[in-house]
Length: 73
Image (cartoon, rainbow, N blue to C red; front, top):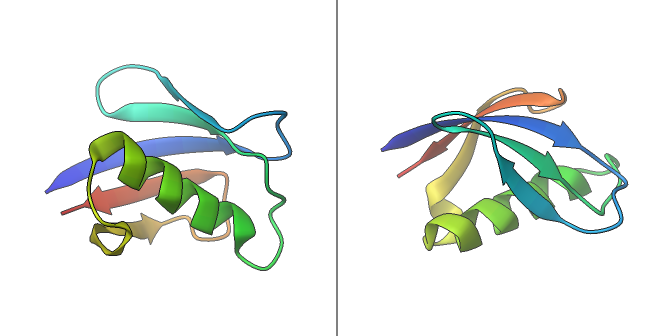
């Protein structure tokens, strides 16, 4: 199990994960924070980065916040 801290920036030109220090990232997402679109895109991006299934990526804290805590099993 990995815990990752993410700072989310929405409405970016391209989607990318920018590593900060340790297990923290800044995620730039193309989607808007409407109807859970940004959270779904973040889960897709993290699943690709860590090479796990999307079902193994869970948002533990910050579902409606820019600052999120993610658990990856």
